[in-house]
Length: 311
Length: 71
Image 1 (tube, chains in turn brown, cyan):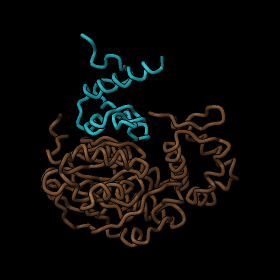
Image 2: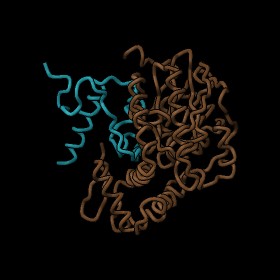
Image 3: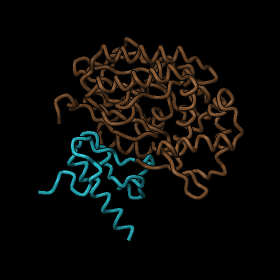
Image 4: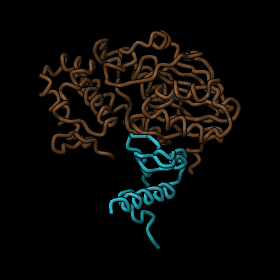
């Protein structure tokens, strides 16, 4: 393995997919896991963590941000290891305490998550010991205003969550209705990309996809994507609606086209975007978004079904 | 000498071999194989640090397993 991609022995990355985010497991000292996947995959998440830890108990669960694909395994892991303490971003404390379904983007996006209680919070500037190394907590607003990254200066490794992937970054939620501040979201993501550029990591462990070492290329792609989003607020909303449907499709494998209109109407985020942007009736909206997914190769039509096309 | 991409021409040499994950992520009743991608727990857990050669070996096994159940 190339030197730049080297991981300390106390770290193991569990690369998941696009429904569950990646999990980073730390052994040595108190065992920990950063981010826990989607609720429906929690059983597999627990099995994977158990396989990596062996007899060592899980001591800590850390979440970079509280989206369903990053916190979905928290409750199951806490049941499997009752001594594990859960740490979430301080900015999410109120939302998670109240279990605010809308603020957690659950119901409005047709997603689910098992409720959990947290033990600690972390904020930018804190230092976390994980795997015998010091990790600095760094603010990374953009995808989510409260999202955090973990930076190990001694190793040059950045856990970036959804602020930066090998090919782009996560939807800019602060730009979406009902809060909808396009300028704020873009400025925040721009600042976050600049932060990452200044850190100059040798290895980035993203929330989705493989860890990567060509950080310059990833940043260039991200900056180009951000420039396109900045110039096209409507395009940003359209992309968010597509992603919402794509996630549902990945979860279910296929959706009956006849039911698509009603399904989309039941997702408050998509309904809000439709009101702001398309102003289509249920059937027309379904046709539009399904067509976009088919055009991008994420889905195909098969009889009366919209079917997820696996990569 | 077989090419490194032997049997898997779509995974070009030099490009990281992609994950077989299809988003189902559930182990079978025996807890042995993922019912989505067909990998073992170890294959999933070790994927991130596996070499491209090792990943291609997993893909070949998955393809062979799928072919034998298509019969």
